[in-house]
Image 1 (cartoon, rainbow, N blue to C red):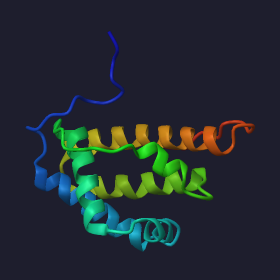
Image 2 (image 1 turned 180 degrees about the horizontal axis):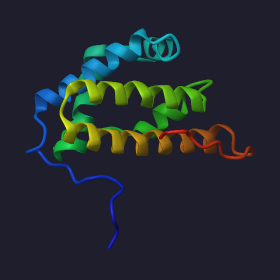
Image 3 (image 1 turned 60 degrees about the vertical axis):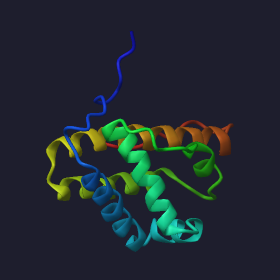
Image 4 (image 1 turned 90 degrees about the vertical axis):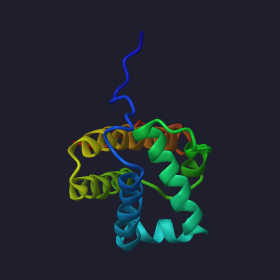
Length: 141
């Protein structure tokens, strides 16, 4: 039996509206960020579609819905010039956003998942783009 690194999705703890608010508030911050904003703006072509996709992703993670269809790893691996600091900044903004939303269950669950995701994406990015270099861990605490 395997143990998940984060809580099981629970539709009773957060609403779809809270999930959508998380996505919209986070990206509002990220798009204004001097480091992350230019990356998002140069790679997200259709923000409305991106919001739907990210809301579906976080709804699946937090509420157990099954609307998300996608493969995040290849899209992130293809981005040029990412580094640990960018992933750490993404995580910092995400955590600020969950705290501001005021739902402690959402904050705990979403932050747990976000830390796991940031670590996995950064590991995958390094393995693909820098296979001969030592792994640089994220500072996610």
